[in-house]
Image (tube, protein in one colour):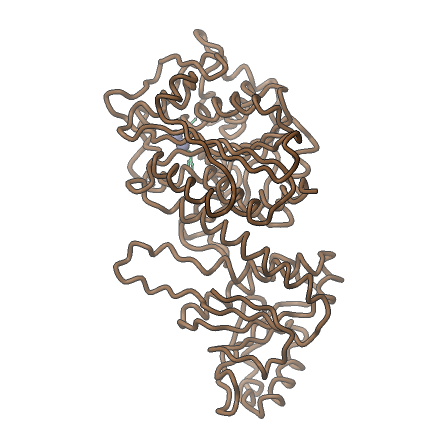
Length: 504
Ligand code: BES
Ligand code: ZN
Ligand code: ZN
């Protein structure tokens, strides 16, 4: 895919289709201007007033024979007073999807007046350009990999153009960085959408090894023997019921002095969650191939951070397992021991995510980290709580929580904090072990997930927990313009934005 940012006039762009943007309140004037420029091709459209410049609306026209591009797409940006980074993301995504559907492969996107948008949004020229690019780049993926005839054709040439030479340097930087970040988000989507017969813990580890070489970070993979030697009882027990053995991945990126404390990202990597012996109902079980969405977000974040060469140290911990109910499976009533020796009574084998995360959070303390953030598709209750709009955020450190919240607002991968009050602790008490792996049914399910994890973190390091079960996967009804069917890649853009604030 060739991507350019050019200071050029619309007439000088040569592509399958060239676009022009207009706010709703500037639409009549802009249409007149285009009509004059292109010698009356918009006469009928102006007369019918069919295109009003509303957000996410577009209209396609054909240009005369003496034009370098044969087609013109006018894109509506909505009310100029109400423009936001998210409205730009959505508008450009809607336009890009329309052009993909018509199989155009070389496209020119006009860049709106960045200085004006800055006055409304308070965002930098760089951030505005990044949002525009995200709208376009995040749509250039389709999960149709297994169609024998895949009819999705991504763009092969994208030209962002403006006739203003101002802010070219920031805008070009933003285009370059946005491509890296969106590619990483798409990697996460690909991993999540991959069927679990192709994406076992071992295959996941193989993928990450290749990714690390290409992107420039290191990875160490522990197999089931090493996991047993280390007494990672959570990973070992959850993995016991599958013929596909577990893996524990350690990703490392050193962008700063080795003595600097790292940030640790922990991702839940359940490549398929059948529920185990506490088996899930059939309806919807197919979606549980995405139960490694947290792990995928960690891998995506590493790819982007390594390519962008952020100046910080980053560790990724990914316990990868398949949760299955065979004769060797762990069972309700069992007592298991985590890496640090904490004993856990298994109440429900479908609460497997927190068991593998317990080992990883215990292990994270070995790095004396600056902060630890875990990300996981942990509870169906987060969908009850937030619908598909937000992820749940919990933790033990106000400053870290604030920082993640702010990154969520900027990227629109939004989060909302839930409390981890100590009064909840007693709901997870066990008569026979240090803790039980579930609380009472239908009570604060998402919070109970956080309460369980808190037991392993205590105050060993600043910690935040992101429950992304609500946002990792869309079954259609909640698809934003820049999303594609299935996995959203949620967490990659959030992490990269957050980690940028630690880069120095
Ligand atoms: N992987 C699921 C959570 C999930 C549900 C993710 C829906 C995405 C969409 C998790 O392992 C699980 O099964 N959690 C249980 C916990 C319960 C048994 C306390 C749940 O949410 O029902
Ligand atoms: Zn489960
Ligand atoms: Zn799960």
